[in-house]
Amino acid sequence: MTNHLSELRSNLSQATRGAVVGALSPKKAARFMGRLIRGRGGAPGTPPGTLLHTGDRRMEKVGLRLLAYDGDEFREEVLSSVSEAVPARDAPSVAWLNVDGLHDSGVMEEIRDHFRLHPLVMEDVMNVGQRAKVEEYQDFLFLVLPMLSFREETGSVDVEQVSLVLGPSWVLTFQEWSGDVFEPVRERLRKAYGRIRHRKADYLAYALTDAVVDRYFVILERLADVAEELDQEVADDPAPAAMHRISHLKRELLLLRKAVWPLREALGSVIRTESDLVTEPTRLFLRDVHDHAVQVIDTVETLRDVASGMMDLYLSTLGQKTNEVMKVLTIMASIFIPLTFLAGIYGMNFRYMPELQEPWGYPALLVLMVLVAGGLIVYFRRKGWL
Image (cartoon, rainbow, N blue to C red; front, side, top):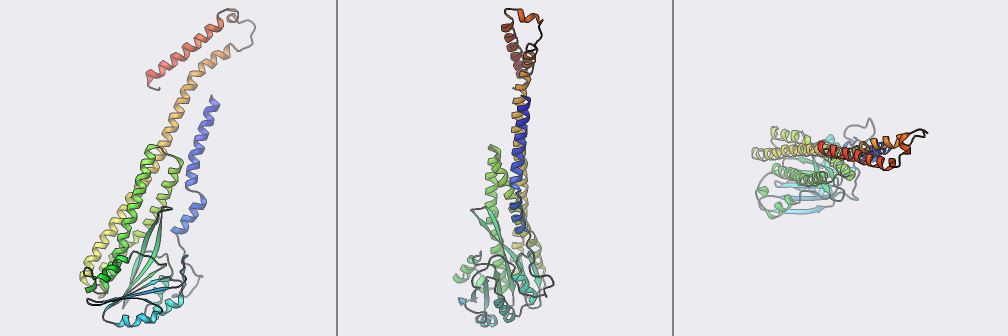
């Protein structure tokens, strides 16, 4: 019985360690660290302003889409070259040039030259993995925003860098690949819905930033649903698979926190800037986006606390189940220990043992064993151990 008890304790400990090791396997940990920490890329000593794309995903061809508008007219077209956007740049109407794909350094050089951007700006555009930030130049503002998407099949959060350049009457947006959260803004421009067609380029930049931040709430709602499902699963019947899912949720929340946390400071910098590119009416709307970013950060921290609590609950529930099993086995061992003692005495090979000559010795010993076992069971019940 003692050997069986030790063996079960060892198996339970190995199961717990296996769940933890599985959740933090070296391959998964390395893959996650690769998503969390993205190197600067390029050879050491590369001159500042070198255009080198450091992302993993590349499109076959850079996509250029131009939207030009004012209060009365709207024009949308797909461009074949950057030079076609130059007339819209100099026009009094607002122009929005969206660039999908950052791998072609030749196209990036054309954009830099035609829009007179600083070389360090284009370097940051192509060097993806930047933290959210705002940089103020003489003729434009440069913003870096993390755009999030959620993979339903894996339950993972993808972070894409979106670079936004705000000029006097134009806005540039750079994305790593096609597909974004800006389609509602495009629809508002096409249908002249709201005030966007009657505002300047800074309001367009606000609308794009607001679309990026609003997407965060969709991702957080999906992660909250996952957390709620996990919480119910852990409370009902915790299994080793739950440990993996909780660990995965914590990693995704950490990645989300790293992406979103600097955004609060960046938006605050835009609100406080003295640049004439941001008008006072637009600052009021930017304050609202800043409040949303703070709310997102608070929600992320709350979900991280919930995930940590679920991990503690899982380990506590697993420990409680182990204690219940150990309690039953301990009671069984306590019952059989005196019986084993009696059997051991009369199993000795001494010649002169008076009880061995009694005709009722064997039945009497069995009755004694039953009484001892029954007495222990009654005692354990009175103590509340059974």
